Length: 325
Figure 1 (spheres, rainbow, N blue to C red):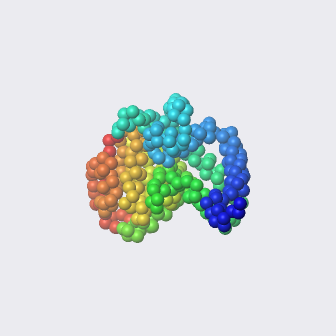
Figure 2 (figure 1 turned 45 degrees about the vertical axis):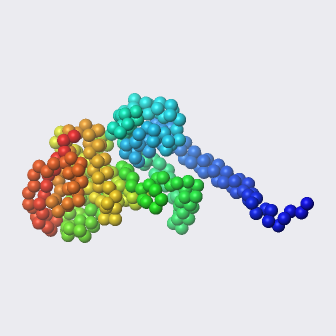
Figure 3 (figure 1 turned 135 degrees about the vertical axis):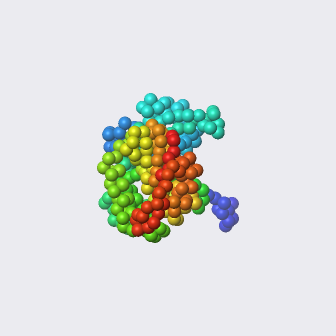
C-alpha cells in the first residue's frame, strides 16, 4: 500500500539525538558542579541540601515551611528534621503563622545570617572561578545561553515575580557593596538635594567604621536588588549605648521607588535588631527626606527631637527618631 504524501504531517519529529545531547550536557554540568561542591563542602558544616535551604531563608527573609518544601521539592519529613537540626544549632527560629496557626514561619537568627553570609561568599567565589579564564565576550555568550536555558525549560522564579515584572530580593552585603553605597549616596544626594562633598566624606567615614568594627552578631547591611540590579541599601549598627541599634544610610534608587524597596529594607533592619536582642533602634535624618520619614513612621518610629543646622552646604532641620523593640 502506498503511503499518502501527507501521512507524515502528524508524526512527531525524532528527538532522540537532541535528547542524547541534552543528557550529555546534564552529565557534564552535574559533574562540574559536584566537583566544586565537594571542594567547598570539605570546609563547610552544611550538606548541599542544607545550603539550598539556608540560601532560600536568606533570600526570602521569612518563609513558611510549606512554601519552602514546595519551592525546593523536599520531602516534608526530611525538611522537618533538617529544620530541627538548624533550630538545635541556633540558626533559625520557628513561630506560628499569624494568618494560619497550622503553618510555621521560619526566620534566620543572627547566627544563621552569619552562616548564610559565609555560604554566599563561598558560592560566589566558586562561581567566579568558572569565569576567571573566560574573555568578556565568552562570558557574555555563556551567560546568555544560561538565561536561554532558564527561560525555555522553566520559569525563572529568582529573577521574575511574574511575566515581565522584575523580582525584588534582599541579601546581605558582599565585597564591593560598601563602595557602591558611598558612590550612590554621594551622587543621589548631590543630584536631588544639592549636598556637597562633605556628605560624601561623612558616608565614607560611616562605611569605613562599619567595615573596621564589624561584628556579625550586632551589625548587618542589606542590599536590595530588582531584577538582579542593586537598587537600595541600609545598615544596622551598634549605637554606642548599651542595647541601642542605629539604622543608617537608607538608600533607594529613583528607578526602584514605588516597589516597596525602602519598606522592606527598614523592616529587615528592625527585625534583625529585635532578633539580635537590642532594646531600641534610633536613627537621624533630615526633614526634607519626606519619603524616608514616611517609611520610618509606618515602621513604628517616633520623632523625639529636631533642630536646625547647616551641613553639606545646605540649611537643614535634623531629626532624631526612636523605636522601642
